[in-house]
Length: 312
Image 1 (cartoon, rainbow, N blue to C red):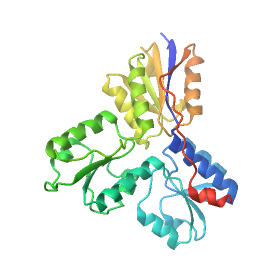
Image 2 (image 1 turned 180 degrees about the vertical axis):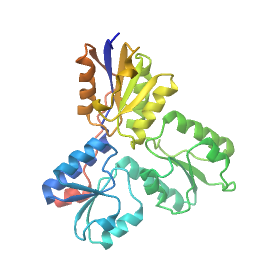
Image 3 (image 1 turned 90 degrees about the vertical axis):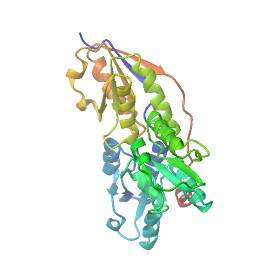
Image 4 (image 1 turned 180 degrees about the horizontal axis):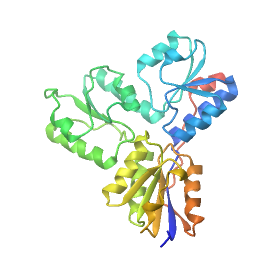
């Protein structure tokens, strides 16, 4: 039996930080002309990166690859202080598109270190966001990504201890790690305000409700998108078949052989056009399309100060 309905859950897709970062690159191209260099993928979505490259953006991993005096945009994921130093040394015109919620975690790391705290960072090893935060205090912040990592921590028993987290973690998984931390270190403090970003939290909450209504869950996003992967894991943890898909070409009809209802969400860096393209795949095969709007998001961020000054 073919799929009877496809349910699109909201909130999904672009968050305020991603929307801001993409607009920053587009405005830089309009203001300065091409090429505009981007340190690391501006956001973790293959389609977004390819579209910007068609317009004249050049993605690089090393600042040494950027010609001196060029315009360079730092990606939404944040950067270690060393990269700002190199940009200045190479006389690059830096436009910083770091998500303000990631910047908040950087500032917390610096502030608490100055106050004499030992900081533990909960995140994924080698993720670019974590590399940036750990770069604030090289070699001084232990990273944990599981309860097992907490159990093997050897930092003594400091009186002043606090944890910070990557903004795109699984809310449930992070809560479990925090519980292990608090058992081992009862004195550890929570960050002043939740570090996991609103969009990550909202999308994970929405997919839990979606999973209860459908047989198969699709998450639109690229494989290097942490928050998209966490959405898949959230649905799987509830016993649902769930798949990460870049676009409609990624769909496998075998996934839906016994499915009457398919749910679609999207990671915070996935364009809405890809969601609609996948929904159209099912509609063209006779499925009814439904929208499940669980929460409205109206958060926006102002553009980087460097870009505002360039327009004066």
